[in-house]
Image (cartoon, rainbow, N blue to C red; front, side):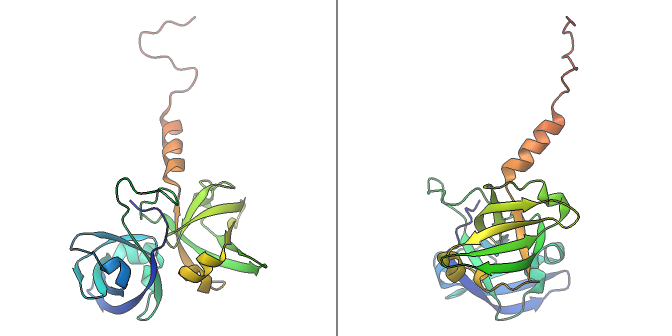
Length: 212
């Protein structure tokens, strides 16, 4: 599990095509400092398993399906990525519960800078828009953010406000209109939907219960 608080910006050091997968070698001195084989590290929101590690790099294999369903398939050597190690039990949950399981991708629509922050609009698939609410949480490229507005319709979008720290310390500061980003909606919203869908209707009665 992760919290969506990015620890550092890393960079793709090497990319090896393995046919049905790709092995990424990622430079990240901080997250690699205590990395071991089998550890989980979120790379721009995608939970990957450490297969090997060097002095300041680690390698992870990405399956073809993940490459197609996330923005990791767009990466080239030299590209920056957001990195976060799995959270420790008992640690402060500064962001929100993030699984590292990307639900889909969105695209940056536009950016509106202001004096102290920048408002970014992100288009997203219609089937994900229902999980977003104003003042709720969403993960964008692994970064825990608060939703400002949500607009439904044939081309739904949501907006987020990026503070200076986020603009500088994550890759979101360099994303341009048209760029693809990984999205993970709040897992609590999906659990609520599942539970409501499985709940009995009001006119149903447990077996053996008499009608009044």
